[in-house]
Structure formats: C-alpha cells, structure tokens
Image 1: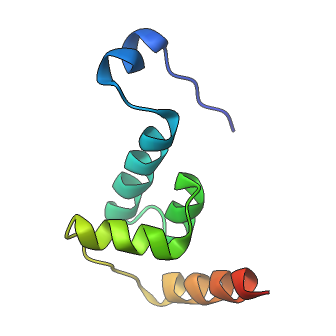
Image 2: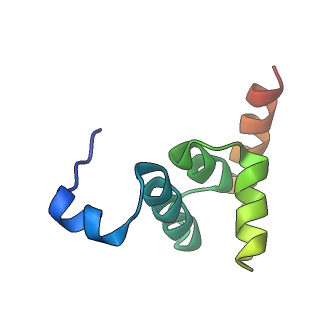
Image 3: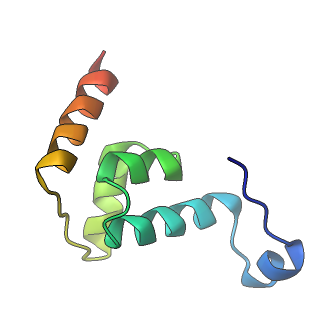
Length: 80
C-alpha cells in the first residue's frame, strides 16, 4: 500500500518522510492497532530503537498474549 500526502500539507510542518512514519507508528502502537514489532517495521527502525523512543516519550509498552506471541516470532526471525 502506498500513501501519498500533498506537499502543501507536509512541507509547512517541516516533517520528513521518516518522522511521519515514526509518528504514525507510535500513534498506531498507542491505539493498540500495531504491536511493537509492527510499529518498528512501519517506522523502518530496529525494534530496540522503537523501544527506546517509546521509553523516551514515557509511552508504556503493552501487549496481550497474541501480541507477545507476535513479538517472539518477530524476534526469532530477526535473530536468524
């Protein structure tokens, strides 16, 4: 999926594509829409870096059993 934003909207904010990805990933994580691993992939950053950013912003990690299983699967894949 490709999402496009008008330069007229984005340019005045001074945000880069990377910062928009990060903010979207954080927002979706906070809303329990994405897991930590999924939000890190959306932001195109390592999962550990996403954890650091969440901690810096004092955003609590949360996960249910299914999210924990997804995190473990993702960590297993990343370690290969």
